[in-house]
Image (cartoon, rainbow over all chains, first blue to last red; front, top):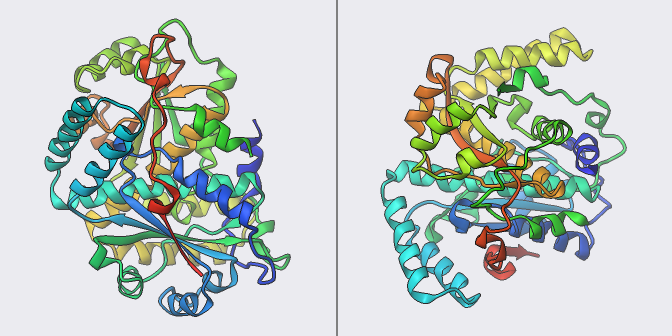
Length: 209
Length: 209
C-alpha cells in the first residue's frame, strides 16, 4: 500500500527547480495514467495540453497572477473540457468500442441512450458535468506524479477566459478548467517542510452500519 | 510504475460478489487515500458517507434505477459536497492549520483571503466548484481500490434529489454528487472480460514544444 506513502510525500509545489526537466519516459507514464482515468460513460469529454514552450508559458503566467510555477516547472498540464454538444464525443466513443469488437447494433443503441441521457441536462449542467470529469483526470496526474516522485501544483488560480483566448480553446468547443505545473521541487521551497493538513477521519467520514 | 497495471486491472464493476465483504484494514486504506486527496486550498468542502446498512441501501437502490451494485457491493461510498456558505469550512481549515503550529496571524489573513476569493464566485459557480472537489476524491478512491485489487463502480446514474432527501443532506448544507459501490467482482460479471476502451494518446493530448 505504497499509495499512502506517495500521497504523504506529495505537496502543492510552490517553487520548482528550473534546471530539472521531466524525462520522456516520465512524461509518457503521466500521460498514460491520465489516459486510463475513469470518466462518465467512458467518454473522456476533454483534452489535455502539455506545454513546454517558454514563450507561451510566459504569456500564460501573465494571466495567472504571475505565479512562477507556470514558467519554472518542467511542463504545464492544462485540462480542457468540452463545453457543449457532446454528440461528436459519443459518436467517437461508439466508434472506439466497435473497433475493439463490440457488436455494431448494440453499440449504436447504447450510444443513442447516452445521447438521450445527456440531453436531459441543461446547458449549464452539461458544461459542469464535463468539467467534473477533468478533475478526475487531474487527480490521476497528481497520484501518478506522487508515485513517480515527480512534483506538481494543481491550480485554479488563473484567468480562465484569457487562457481560453490565448490557447484558442473556444473555437474548438473547449474551455480550460484546471491546470498543473509539473516538474521537480526546489530545495528552497519552504512549502515542502510544512505539515500536511487534512480533515480528520471523523470529520470527513460517516459510517452507517 | 505499478499504477498503470492497477488502472488496467480495474473496470466499472456491474455485478458484485454478494458474499465478499471488505476487511476493516481495506476500508481504512480506502478512507485514508480519500482523506489525503488534493483539494482546492486544502479545504475538502465535502464529506463521504460509507453505507453498509442493507435496509438503507435497498431504499437507495429504488432511486438508482434499481441498479443491483447499490445493494450487492460490500459498501456504498457517497460523496457529498457542501453547497453554499463555505465560511465554516474556511474557519475549520484555519483552525486545523494553526493546530499544526502555523502562526495565528498569518493563517487568519490567509483564511480571509480565501473567503474573499470564494466570494467572487456566483452561488452556482461556488456549488460547482465544491462538487468538482468530490470528483478528485472519487478518483482517489478508484485508484486506491485498483491498487488493492478491490472493485468499484463509479456512478452518476441515481436520483440526486431523492438521495439528498433520504440521507437528510440538504439540512446540513450538503448534496450528493457522485457515488461508488465498492467490493469484489462476481466471476459472472461479463463486463470484466470487455477490452478497456480509451481515447488514443493522440486524441487526448496536444504537446506544445
